[in-house]
Length: 205
Image 1 (spheres, rainbow, N blue to C red):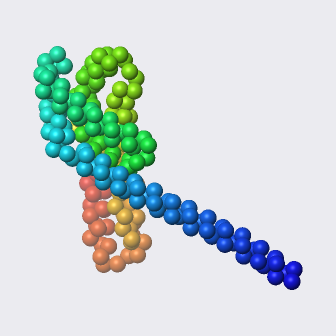
Image 2 (image 1 turned 135 degrees about the horizontal axis):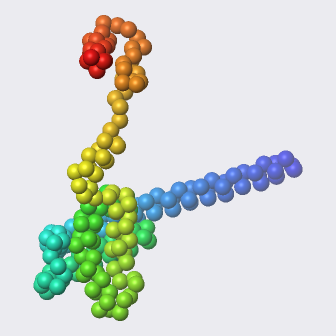
């Protein structure tokens, strides 16, 4: 009888652990579903017609001094800053996928932030230097800049591309010190080996 009670107690605790695991899994998948929904809705918001118009217009203001901005320029910049500020705050709270948003909008966020930097500072001064004013936008810009920095010149672009290049991998060949070594000699290897030898002879000559 005592052994039976012990088995019942063990079964009880095992069932409780299993229930806890199931509950955690359900909560995890519910959170993923919630984030997926939030990401879709945020993506829709960032692709609204007025946001697209504002994004395209602000891109053209990069070389225009703030003192020359018209009321329409300021209105378009305000729309864009508000949208990106909301996006940043939602990502901070974990309501949407940071990875997706940064990958999809990082270039636009960085370009428009640099174009509206003086405008944002001007608005902060108007509203009393409130530190939190459009802080979500600034946070989004900083994350985008660190994760996907803009390529500002051909030299930087070339350096980044060269850095990402990897040496080719062949199952039968190994590349070392600029020469090709065949680990399994066969007729297919001869043209490649001959080419490598020719290159070495040219360099020596």
